[in-house]
Length: 94
Image 1: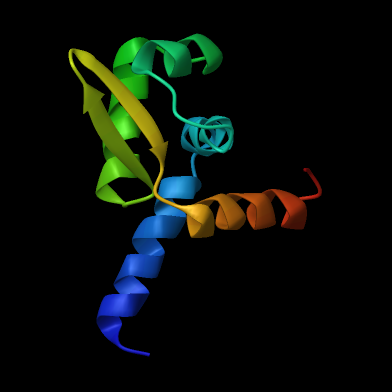
Image 2 (image 1 turned 60 degrees about the horizontal axis):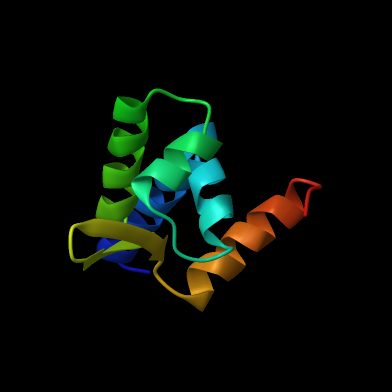
């Protein structure tokens, strides 16, 4: 196991290790959402939600897609959705 892989794993786990970020990931398992839709579902200030979205983007757990003036966020793929599901399953949920 090289240091780069371990560092990436730490970044991913940090991305999931905060309640609001994990809540965002759980929401995005259902498909793409706009920042407004995410903010409505996450009990945090819109500025904080924007910060969490940026962190998740940097951790490569989510992706952003522009459609005209609208922005949509989604999980990066099936592996991310499976990771979120497994974390919830391990925790006794889902």
